[in-house]
Amino acid sequence: MVDPMHFEASADDYAAARPSYPAALWQRMRTLGLLSRGARALDLGAGSGQATGPLLHAGLRVTAIEPGPRLAAHLRAAHPVADVRICRAEDMQFSASSFDLVVAATSIHWMDLDVLLPKIYTILTSRGRLAVWRNVFGDADAPTTHFRARIAEIVAARQAPPRPGPPAEDLDATIVALTTSGLFEVTDASTYRWTLELDAAAIGRLFRTFSDWSAGEVEQAVEAVRAVGGTVTEHYSSWLVVLAPIERPSTP
Ligand SMILES: C[S@@+](CC[C@H](N)C(=O)[O-])C[C@H]1O[C@@H](n2cnc3c(N)ncnc32)[C@H](O)[C@@H]1O
Image (cartoon, rainbow, N blue to C red):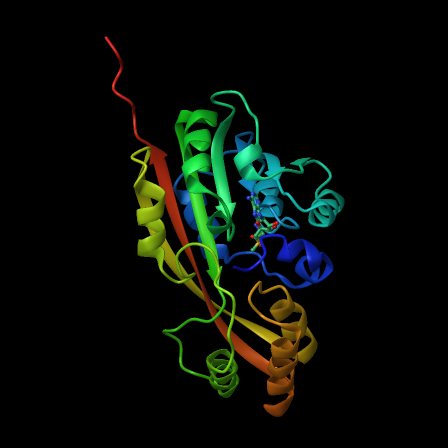
């Protein structure tokens, strides 16, 4: 299994290269009423702040959970007003109804849902929402570029360690994982397609942050960019699923 602290080991690359999320995803959050100014948000697995920043910018008060101290240092430097806690999400301690919104951005697959979901259920207000989203680095529905054909060859030739949770692109499997506890129901699900222009150095920085890519494989990806002229247009997608806590029947 890949190491959940991989991102900590590549914290500088992570802060420099990992993109945030498409504007349309944030617009959907706004349309759903999840970005109310002053609302209390909890960002789980916050990394260097890819979701924390836009949440703060929207006027929310953000508590960020990040187990990696170097990532947390990047997060604090970029967003000094965020309340950053260095711990695993499964170990967090908050009193009941502390948050209006809990988010996990490209991170919930690293967490033990049997421990986490009951905690989120308790710390969310009864009208609060859990918003889970994920960047998928490689849109299978986009036309295959020369660079992506080479990436497919590199991937086919390697023995990558398995990553936790459902495959990144499998929103349906993620929804099953998030709802089987019976604590949450889906209120909204959506997918966004976007592109990013990257040169060889940027591909190196970004691919070094991928938990299942070795240094040698990243170097092959960098070579592949140079072979097609030095820049590539990458087609990525992001999905978003919003869940509401299911009301418990009141005891007589
Ligand atoms: C792919 S990164 C996502 C970071 C950021 N949210 C983003 O949108 O780019 C996954 C993050 O989850 C964190 N993580 C891994 N296991 C975790 C756990 N059990 N509890 C909380 N965070 C965890 C990692 O340290 C890393 O920062």
